[in-house]
Length: 378
Image (cartoon, rainbow, N blue to C red; front, top):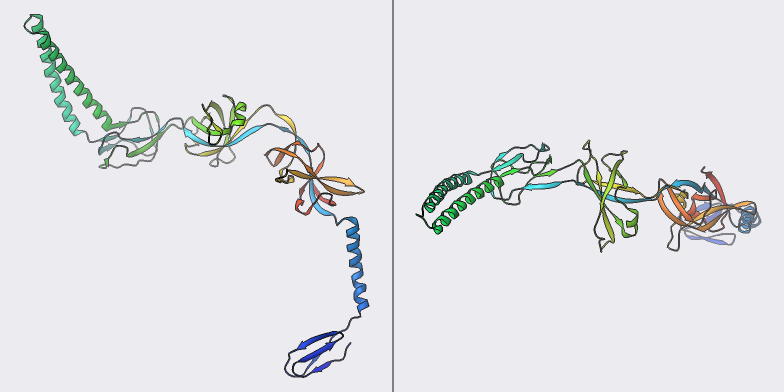
């Protein structure tokens, strides 16, 4: 133990070979323990020997998790994001302008084909129809009279033809009035479910103004696209498994009904359409869904946990666990990976069944690094 040093004001305190500045105002007594250099070196010796052993052995073993390369039953499939489309669906609108005088449906109602839904003001057209019917009666009488006169040679053929033309024009005018009246009374074009009403009594509608949506929900059409490279794998009649977020845990089955007539030149994809029964009306047009199309028959394939694969621009690889000189080491092995599903990735080349691969801890590894399997999956 060194004797205490008395320092006045700011000065330099010498301890061994060091000089320390002291900025205390007033006398200060500071005591420093002194440790022999030889004792410090002796305490570092075990640590230095451990580092030397680590360098000689190639490093401490890294704790990792590992799992086996499995042989599983595998079936090729095509996954796609699909849209649900109504078998028939329109947004009802009027062809002629007019004021709404009657609404004969409720939002969400099931309507049948031909059922009247909305009525526009038709008072002028009804009056015109009455006038044209009277004209038809008069033209018919004139035509019949001309026929009798022509039979007695009291009228010419030209007079008969003129009377007949007038009669036909009058009937056409009545037909036009009835057509206009039919357009002012909007009816359901097909049986289906009507949506939310968008008009009110007394509202003036212009041509093209939306009234409500009308859709057929059962069955629904499922539309999705597949790459042109997989067109040969899709056939009419194949099953398509459908999942939607609105019905978690449920899977619906559709069947392919048609393929598009051409490939989209921008995306090089082709549209596929399937028919999906919807008897419980759980699904609605416009929903998006996950479509899974099974291709071919199941076959045996090698698979590893998806987290075992390290993806790299130079090629995908895994770390195999091998025994080398009495210890386990990680060996980087290039693989050719296939599809991933259910937490497993298909291995097309690079591994054999039963081999152990690292599933966790890859970031701490390099090729040939010693490892210790802390957890092994079965």
